[in-house]
Length: 120
Image 1 (cartoon, one colour):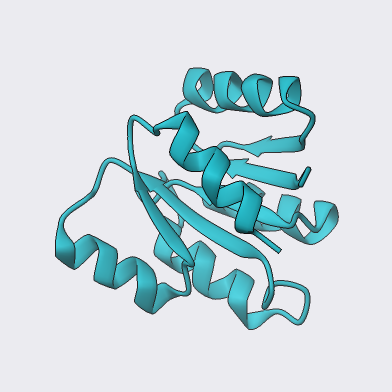
Image 2: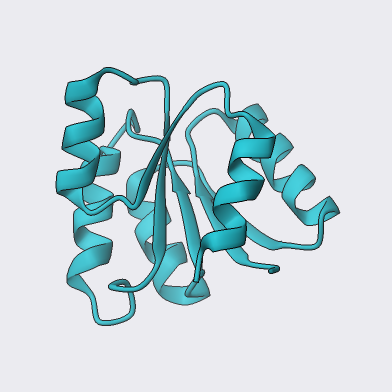
């Protein structure tokens, strides 16, 4: 199933590369490079899926996820933490913040594709 995907990632090269790859496979993407602009983009774009880095320069990914979940339009978005932080405590924090899944960078594209196929 093709998705509308918002990538919120402060590493510009990583964000652009992932966006290109996803669009090459038929998805529609938008990219934001910090939490505040990511929230604005989510409200405007209304994605089905958000790939959200945790270690952002302003609002961290946990805060962004929480703010998305507080909105009427964000309750059903499929939130994926895409982060270098992969310890059990990081996964627990992500789940508590409202993430549906947790991927550790570098992201395995086949694992991401499998997740996108179940995102509603």
